[in-house]
View 1: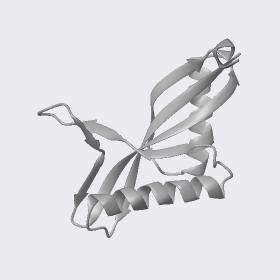
View 2: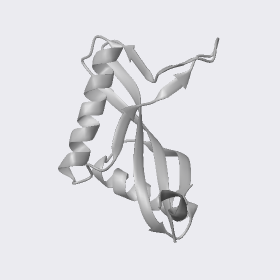
View 3: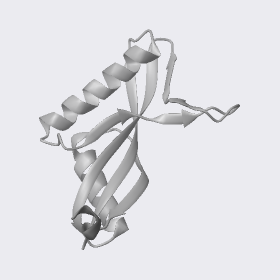
Length: 119
């Protein structure tokens, strides 16, 4: 049994916004509220990063058109005592997906924690 940090990407739709900063703020706030309402306050929520196609520099994953935004969020959750990497990913998607119904989720990274490193 091992412990894992599972990072997932979520696509969050925000309506009636004028700027990218507003869209990011609303998306992070709404996701956090929905997670907290389901006692999932241990899930970390942050805005994702997308690499610029021209220069490669990262920028916030958000796009606004016609007052509607699509914001890419990164959700991180610690999974303890999983049977393996795939098991940890299934647990993470179940935990987060249950609180964020109808929000597309995709696992982007899974890191195994070495218990001896933390001692």
